[in-house]
Length: 233
Image (cartoon, rainbow, N blue to C red; front, top):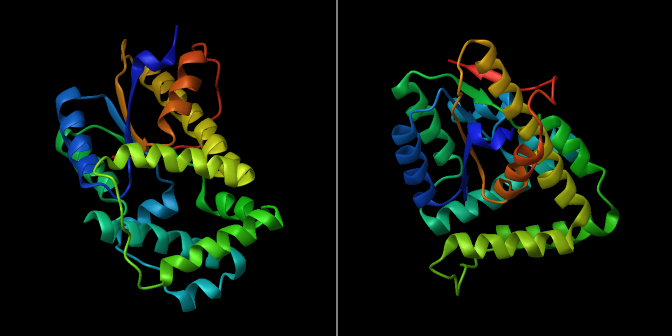
């Protein structure tokens, strides 16, 4: 049987207010046994504490710190354009889980592992990413944006895959595998606790949704044993 029948994935754009609203309404209407979000423990704690890394602090961590800082600034810039801070849809999921009194699981890959992989990217992709990242710090507004933010995001993911094949594998495909494995482990855990038909709502980035759904749909029950998710009540 497919694990997808136990998991409802919400694909969000991390800077879209509509995504936040969808997360809240879906979780409250579905009333799942558990909620899972695309965060690891380090990013979860940083978000809860509203802690932001400055450029000076990031440089102390070397290459990985600088990469993390640039990626954060990219999302921050997008948040300004769409009227929402990055991570608001994750905060909404946390709040909805607390409202229902159901467990919350953190299913994403460890950020330090992700940053180490990015640091090992081919020189061509590093250079291209650095050049494109420079535009984030320039006082130039985004123009010609389509009203359909989600459609634009899908196009952006296709372009990203073509321009950055290594980074796409690291940032999208490998994380899909980690999150799918963790969702399967959560379902198995709930079944072991006596829940006959577990229902899990997972909040992930829009670019991760199709890949995770494919992995869940093709996996046979109890095919995965190990997991790396964190649990928060």
